[in-house]
Amino acid sequence: MDIICGTYPIRRGEKVLGEVKIEKINIRYKISSAIDNIDMPRPFRLAVICGEKIIPLGVMMPDRNGFSYSRSFSSAALSELGINNIDGFTLITDSLPQSDTRPIAAPTPVSSVTDGWQQTDTPGEYLEDGEFRHIFSGCKAALVRKDGETQYLAIPIIKDEPFPVMSVFCLGEVWKINEKLHLVFKIHDGKLLF
Image (tube, rainbow, N blue to C red; front, top):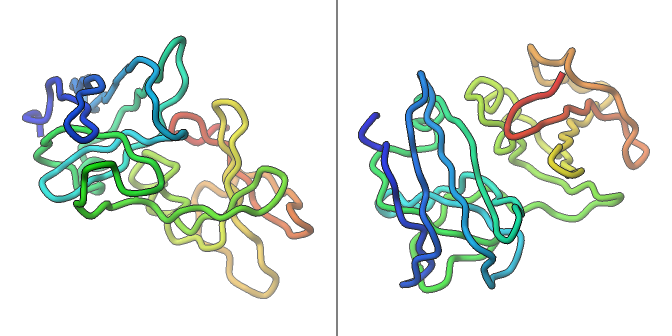
């Protein structure tokens, strides 16, 4: 897996927008990038190109005069995402990248709910840890809300239905959202907050 370490261009169509650096720090792989202010719809995600697949990694955050991205992944998490031989990086919105007709392995788009909450059927995408990603990926009709750099992930508690088995249930708080009970988790940079 060390073969993925290095510097890669970020391309959108034929244009090079910046670069991504991948370095191994202890047993994890840090993926980081900073680009100048660009003219494209926001928010946009940094995505890795692996052969015919385009795999979203996460939203690039506003930073000074541009945008930045920085996350660490275990080798297991990278394998789980399907990242092995990297051809480069691109920026994507919820639609297909410009001048690129390859299929996208993108998360399910969220639909609007209320009070800043949005529904998502792919809550695992908000976590970087393989085990926690797996636990949350089985949850349906979850809600997500962003507040600054913190994300809130709400799993519905439905009467007379089994709750997903979660070893992390003690990290959640019971909230009433849209008149329904949810177990809410705080997430920052792909990690659950205590």
